[in-house]
Length: 268
Ligand code: MF3
Ligand code: CO
Image 1 (cartoon, rainbow, N blue to C red):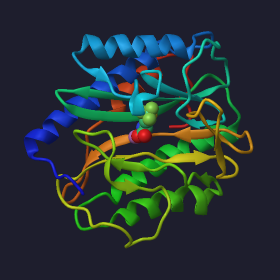
Image 2 (tube, rainbow, N blue to C red; image 1 turned 180 degrees about the vertical axis):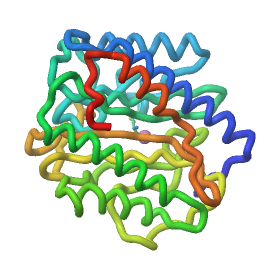
Image 3 (cartoon, rainbow, N blue to C red; image 1 turned 90 degrees about the vertical axis):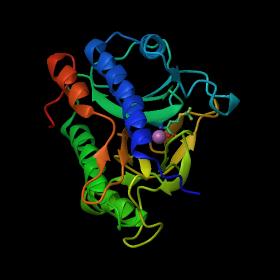
C-alpha cells in the first residue's frame, strides 16, 4: 500500500532528509586517509542524537549493529563500520538513516579518497548521473519503471556496468521501507503510476564489473562477486507534477567535499 503524505508531512520529511545531509556533510569535512569508519559511525551517531533524532539503521530488524553503513570499494551496501584505517584510493559510500519527529530520512553518498584510476572515477560520475536521470522521470503520471529504465539505461546499457538486482530503492515515510519498491532496472511504462506527494528513496547501486553480489558471513555486508568496486548514491524525493522535489541535499555535502583536499571531486 502506497502512503501519500500531506504537504505538512513532506515538510517534516524534508527536515529528516536534511538532517542526514548535514550529518554526511560532517563526514565530508573529516574524511581522510587514516580515519576509520568506526570513527565516522561515532561522529554520525553523536551528531544525529545532538539534533534530537535517532539513527534508524541501528538495531534494524533487531540485527544491524551500527548507525551507518560504510561500504568501501567492493562492498556494495550495508558494510559494517570497522577499525581499519581508510586509505588513499578508497571509495566509500556512507549511508545513514534517521528518525526525526517520527519521520524517516535515508540517503547515501559515495566519497573518493585521493587518486583513483579513471575507470573508477567514471563509475562514480556515471552512478551519480544515473540517480539524477532517475529523478528526472520521478514525476506524477510517470510509472516507477520509467525511473528504473532511466537508471539502467545510463549505467548498464550505455556504460556496461552491472546493475545490482537484489537490492532496490523504496518508499519512505513513517517507516524506512514502504511501498513501492524502486528497482534500478526495468521497463518503461511498468509498475505503479506515480502521484503527487508519494515519497521515494531512489538508490542506484552500480558495479564496475559483474552485477552479481553475495552477502558476507556477517549476514549484512553485500559484496561484488568479482571483487571490483561498486558505487551507491541515494536521494529522498517527493513526487510533484513537473519535477520531483529532492528532500535531501547534496549541495552542502559537495561544498564540504570540495573544501577537503583529501577528497577527489575532479569527476564533477
Ligand atoms: N539505504 C538502505 C536501505 O534503504 C539502508 C538500510 S541499512 C539497514 O535499505 F541496516 F538499516 F538495513
Ligand atoms: Co534506502
